[in-house]
Length: 389
Ligand code: NDP
Image (cartoon, rainbow, N blue to C red; front, side):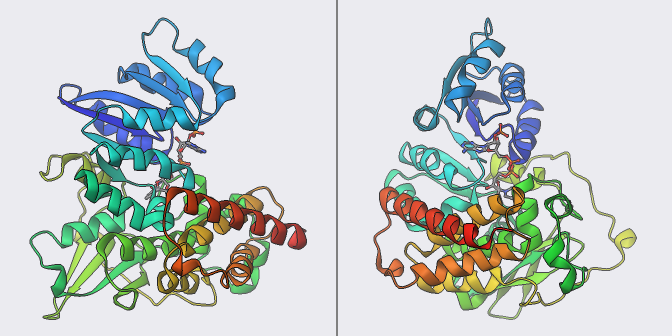
């Protein structure tokens, strides 16, 4: 039996992971499951999968969690340190599906133990790619991509030589507002931005799809994960969300990964890697689909893409600053303090304020990343306070 842990089990990726693990009770023993405020869901998942320990990120959720699991024999714990301790428990495979920069410390702990890390939490690579990779190299741990685009590239590279790769193209649905007139975007509401045309995901990544901050993070993630230079990484709008990524080789061949918009594919690939197993995902009928369309992303509609280019060129702590400013701008939008278009402007202002601080030259340690993250959040809050409507 393989020992697995699911971090962020109560979220969208977490629930899809639970679904796959639950289908094969004979194959997995569940060590840790973690969540945030959704204590009822965490408790019912932990009972269903007979987890060793259930951890909530928040101290004030500990008592409700303890109560919900009383008599089950499942250990309970709460807080950031408890998340890291849970990541240190011996396991063969850990799903990293906490949302945001909070996913980094437990991910690092898992890698230090040599545990295979299935990485949905793209923010870890964006904020601390070098640290994550050196930690994995030191312990011999494997990082497997879970983002659908990166899983697609990863699959496209099986048996290939990375030196033969000429370009990588990741696709973007274009998000909730891809066909809205530009002048309407300023008034777009969080509820409108939270409805994705193709994918069923958590609220934060869904809004990040509408701004393409999600795609911006994924460009950086591609650069970090595959060590491919920024000039060879492209994003293209593909409204059908069926082609997830394409890898172009030096002989001109372009290998595309095609599949339904169902995250259980990428999660299942990482869970079964290096083998393949049956997955309960839809089989595409290409004749019914009829056509696949692609178009260039509009730079005016999606300023986040140019910001990602800056991050990749700058390197160092630029990713931590970009991600933190983006997270605070997103909070500001969700809370109704700033408008939809203000999110990219807040990030641009923070980049401008902090770009003279030698970010690219700084050493990447957990401390330096967390410091840059905190400073960028403070700067973003100050910018938001000025812009607040
Ligand atoms: P959700 O918002 O649906 O779930 C997030 C999970 O993280 C929940 O379990 C939540 O707990 C927990 N959580 C929230 N805040 C904290 C915190 N401060 N500390 C610890 N845990 C916390 O997110 P998604 O599942 O959509 O996304 C998870 C990650 O996967 C993100 O990094 C995202 O970018 C990435 N991803 C998601 C995809 C998708 O299809 N959803 C696709 C590709 C990548 P609770 O709900 O109990 O409060």
